[in-house]
Image (cartoon, rainbow, N blue to C red; front, side, top):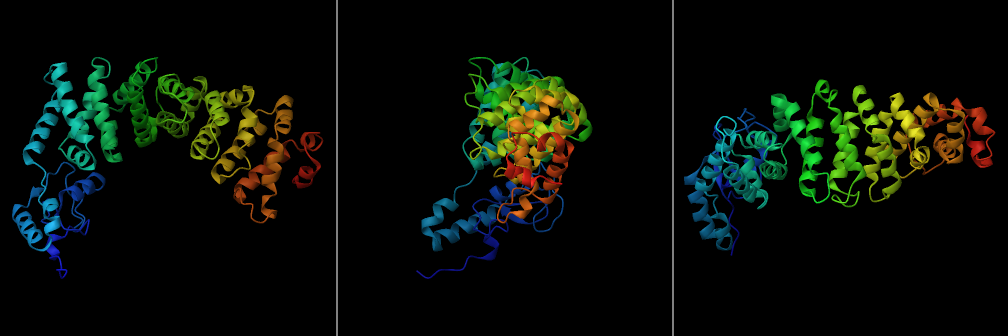
Length: 428
């Protein structure tokens, strides 16, 4: 059969494929429902006209165009006709919108805990069906805000409801603008609810999945915070983050979604000075060093880069530096990444050692840096520009390595731990 050209007005401007469920925006442009819902989650504007569109806009179904597409497919693409006649059910969407509206009003009109749980589970069942279900729930007017409000309100008094709301929120993969709006509304309450969830699910027999979801959402929330808010996170955030890094019987191995989220929280939050002291006092330095010792370099390189980023920032305060040199393997764990396979990790490791050498270098620490091989690695990095094909770092990192080596050159050049070959590489 000769291929028939598809009419241009049957094609979605986003997917460039025949529309399955055509809907029209207030701008007058028609798109496939699934594609435009996904677009509006990321950008509140019409893709073609660039005119603004409300985030909670519900496009109008284009029934006439839908019938034309079905007729055309039945004539020219009979094998594909069934697929193109599959429509999302307006009644289902209306029912889900009613559930969202009902949940959004739960603070003003207290509802039965069981009724709220049933509504949340119904939304969750749709969201976990697949990408189309997630897009449907995310596109419901006010759904993300309502779910976050229910989670905050239920965290301390109705843990089942909070877990169900958190489950739906996690499945929706909320974009930054939704989280930023929630933070602006009541960021302290949201962080408090997440910390409470992490604490409550930290014991044996707890819900590991809920804890992991809370950790990921906490990482997303702290990443979206304005600097003024992020700089004043409560101490309990760091206590629970360190507990995640250390793991427990409930969470299983350290290679978990929660561990990565904890690293993201520490790496981001410690950019602010006040948080560094809180994290150091919570035991973050020791937990990060232990993670560096346990995590396989090749499989979890990105995790080590995050850990080294957090250690670098923690060494910006006296408490962080003291905790690192007090750890029996702190210098060795960091030094192992000075001349490794990752340029980012190498750069962070050099900066950590520079902080230690400059601000916390007792005689014992200076000897430890030589004995553990950290000084030798710094020599290799400092001279790496002379070696072809060995690009461990950039020029700034090489200069930091040279600067660090010059700080205690007399002690390290005379150290029996430094091989003669490395002494030859020592910067003058």
